[in-house]
Structure formats: C-alpha cells, structure tokens
Image (tube, rainbow, N blue to C red; front, side):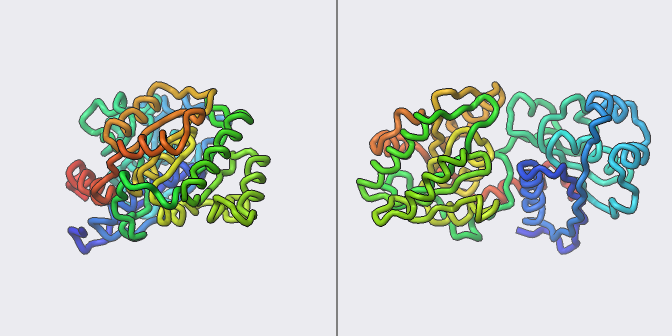
Length: 341
C-alpha cells in the first residue's frame, strides 16, 4: 500500500527493553506499508543519578536539547543522523525522543504513558489505554507488532471449528500476577484432557516461566504419546519464536500475565483465550484494555481452574478474530494523523 517512492528516514530510540523496542518496531513496520524507510537505531539509558521527575522538568522548561542528549544520555548530534521521524516506546525514551525531535525538526511518535511529559511535545502519542487517549494528538490502538500475518499466510482462523492444533504460550509471575503449583498442575491436566479429544499442542515458554515447570514441559514433550507436538523452549530457542507457534495453531491459549503475548496473538489473527491463576489482579488501565479486547470480540479470559475442553470450546466460539491486516489498519491511521509523512 505504498503511497510514495521517497524513503523516509527514521530514528528509532530504544531503552534496551525488548517489550518496548518491539512496540516501536511495530510502528516502523506500519510506516513501511506506505513509505520505504531507512532506519537508524539508537539505544539510550537514563542514568540512575537523573530522576525521571527532574528530567521531565528540564525538558518541560525547554532546556537545550543538545545538553539533555549529551549530559544525560551521552549522545551527540551526529548519532541522530538526519531523521524525518523519531519513534520510541517506554518511559525512559521520552526525554531523548523529545530532544531529538527538537534538535532535528523531525516529527515524532511515542508509544506509552507520558508520565510528566507534555503531549504537545509529540506529533503523535500512541496508547492502548482509553483514559490516555483523550486529546487530539493521541491514538488508541492495539499494541503494535512488526509481525505481518499475511507474510506467514495467516488468514483469519475460524473459531467455531474444533481446533486440531492449539498453541499454548506460557509466561510466569509478573507484577500482581502469581502462579502457584496448583495452577501449573491444573494447566497440565487440561493439556492432557484436550489431547484426549484429539488436539495436539505447540507450547512456548518465556524467560520468567518457572524452571521446574519448563523442565516438566520438556520431559512431557519427550514421551511417546505426548500431547506436545512441539515444545519451543526459550532457554534454547531464544526470543522471537512465536511466529512458528502462531503459524501452526488453529487457536491459542495464553497465560494472562503478559499483555504483549496476548496482543501479539490478536494481532496475528488467532483466536486467543487468556487464562488466569488464582492470584490475579491487573492495574485499572490494563483491566480496561483487556476488556476492550474482549468487547471487540478478539479474545476471552477465564480462570485456569475452570479450564475444560468444553469451556474452552465455548470461549473460542465467542471469538471473531481480526479480518484485516492490523499493519495496514495502523498504516492508514498514521497517514490520517500525520499527513506530512
């Protein structure tokens, strides 16, 4: 859907955290749907001696951007290149994003919460939280991903058919979400029960998955009559392996601790059910985001203790996955909000 042959120069600022970096890469991928891009990547870290409150005050009082970049982040003007657009995600990139845009005159996009920074210092602020999308230059959106469902041949899956292959994406303790041994035991019982009616599983763990449970999955996957057709073990496979799971799965079960894993599955047009441990509580903004995903018909959420093949089938029957490529949808929104691009 490219609308111009001229390359757009993008400065992608990262705080080194994959969750934030991947969101920014998703925005870059959406821009690339309508313009060819040249991307320069710059990693910055806010030093411990500079409190976020103080840094935001300096930025809001228009301290020279050269001083902010040099004294706080150790970045000189040459490191920025000559960008047309600055993109970043994550609170520790806010000041660097604003300073780089001020120095170069580039448009700038930020994904996330602004903390104490001002919306008017950005060309566009993207968020997945409705409460933060209350001014003209903000855009509420599904959390972006650079993955392209069309590239993996992922058409919208029919949630009403009994899945022959299910994906299982497993996280672990995070914030106010805590898994006990009983939760993991019930999840394994469910995996076996679903296998008994003819379903095979593709399973992926995460760095925060308990070592003992990852070991259980590894041993289970080696059995002769294993329910696990493929165990993608992050300990040996490394990150960035969900594409293979999503491409081969009719639907996905995902532990509810990770908004990123859930959003990426929705983005890839897979029916997804998020499953919750007994000790489960989310911040208000995140609860509203999960409710929005459900209201759009893209996902469902249920406790691990209520999981059965029947309850999963009922939940999947209520889901209507995305019928458009979300990269194209986001590209259209960016063109509408930033016509200068």
